[in-house]
Image (cartoon, rainbow, N blue to C red; front, side):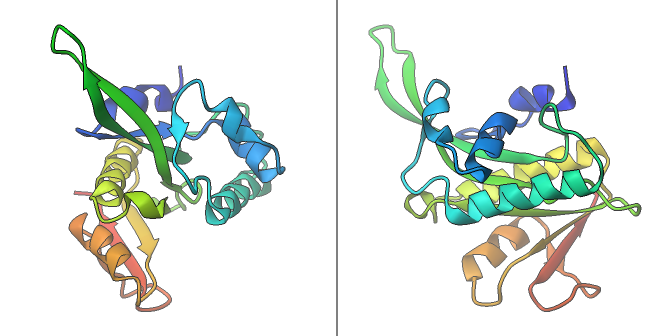
Length: 191
């Protein structure tokens, strides 16, 4: 069992859950394959997912591990997670709620931490699920994951005109990074 297996249940919000992006699906998407159908048995993917940015991000992280000389046989700890949202769709005769699970985006690490324990993250939520707190919660869950894995600092970037993304970061304790490469750099230190 990898550390990611425990995160499947440990990092679960009230309606938002993170699940490591299956490595085989990531590779298929990057290679241009039709990984959407392979995911149907676990969760429905929202319209507009995966986006071109998602596929580009997966390609970058796969390349980063390859550059490190790491052969990935399963999802590493410092990986990309699908953002799943559970919404009630019905209730049973006994009053139990029936939930629909939808993959609405991704949040993840750009690679393992540097020698100082700093790691960078990124995230994206499909347009139909924005402005509902999903990115804020997913970012918070990923921060919990980073601290458990031993990160000392987490960094992220948000374009100056992307007010929503900047709010996601500040809601999770990020502050402008004085050592960053521009005004769009943010950081939060381990509590």
